[in-house]
Length: 356
Ligand SMILES: Nc1nc2c(ncn2[C@@H]2O[C@H](COP(=O)(O)OP(=O)(O)OP(=O)(O)O)[C@@H](O)[C@H]2O)c(=O)[nH]1
Ligand SMILES: [Zn+2]
Image (tube, rainbow, N blue to C red):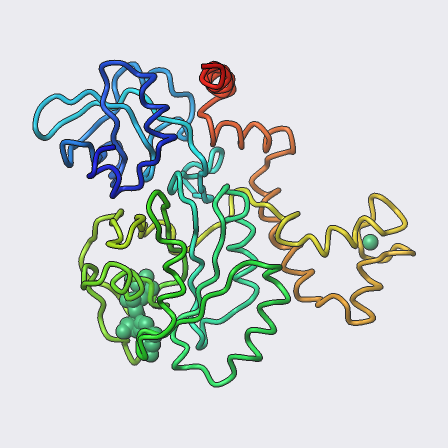
C-alpha cells in the first residue's frame, strides 16, 4: 500500500475497489474550490477537474466529488489530473443551502467520526447538540461529543447530566487546551484508515484541538476577543491533515454551522418516537387529543417539553425542505452511490468480488 495515501486514510477495501479501474490512479480529494479540486495521489498533490464526460453524466451536485472522496484520476503532468470516477462513499454529510435548496449542499464525504465540538462556557446548549446529532446520525458517520474549555466550567457534573439526557449513548470527551487535559481520549478515533471531521460554532476551540492532534501549530488561532468572546483563526488552511499517530482530520469551514437538510430524528429522538407510538391515535398531533402519550410524559416530568419542542422544530425544518419519505430514500441512495444506477452497479461489482 502506498505510504502517502495510507497517511490520508487509505484502507484495503478502497485499494481493492480501485483495482477495478485499469489505467487510472487512486487519489483522495483534500480541498475543493468550486469546480477545482486538490487531490492527493501516490505521486503527491495535484490540481484536478472532473472530466467532460463526468460532468455531462452527473445529474445532481451529489454526483460531484467532495472533500474526503476517493477518486480515480488520470495524471496529466506533475501538477494536474482529471477525475473520472468516485469510489463508493461510506458517509456523506450535507446541509441546507439557500442557493441549492433542492439538493442541499455536500460538505464532506467518507468521514468515520464527526466530533461535535462545544465549549463548556456560554456556548453550551443541549438543543444545539440535538441538532448536530440529527444531522450526523443521518450522514452515516458516528458522532462523538467533544466538550472543550473544561477549565472555564464550574458545574461539569450538572452539564454532563443534562447532556446525557439527550445524547443517548454517544461518546463524550471532555478536554481543556488550557490545562492540556483530555486530548488523549481522542486517540481511539484518530487511528490508521479513519477520517475524523469537526463541527461546532466559531470560537469553541476546533483549531486549537486540531493543533493538539497534529502536534504543531498548523492552524493559527487568535486570542479571544473581549467584546464577543469569539476567537478567529486568521489564515486559510488545508482542509485535510494527516494525524501523526494515524488517521486524518478534516476542518471544513462549511461545517462550522449546520443548517439541517436531512436528518435522522428516529435515532436522535428515539424516546419521543417511542412515546408517539403509544398515543391512542396514530395520527396524534400531540396537542389536545385524548390518550396522548407525549402530553402525559411531559405532565409527569418524564419528557422535557423543550426537548419535544426541539424535535418538532427540526421536523419542521426538514419538511420545509420539501422532501417526502420516498424522496428522502432516493436522496440517501444518491448521496451514497451517486444514483440508483450506480448503486446497482456497485452491488453487482461487490457480488462478483465476493465470488472470487
Ligand atoms: N480557556 C480555554 N480557552 C481555549 C481552550 N481551547 C481554545 N481556547 C481559546 O478559544 C479561542 C478560540 O479557539 P479556536 O481554536 O480558534 O476556535 P475555533 O473553534 O477554531 O474557532 P473558529 O476558527 O472561529 O471556528 C482561542 O482564543 C483559544 O485560545 C481551552 O481549552 N480553554
Ligand atoms: Zn400524542
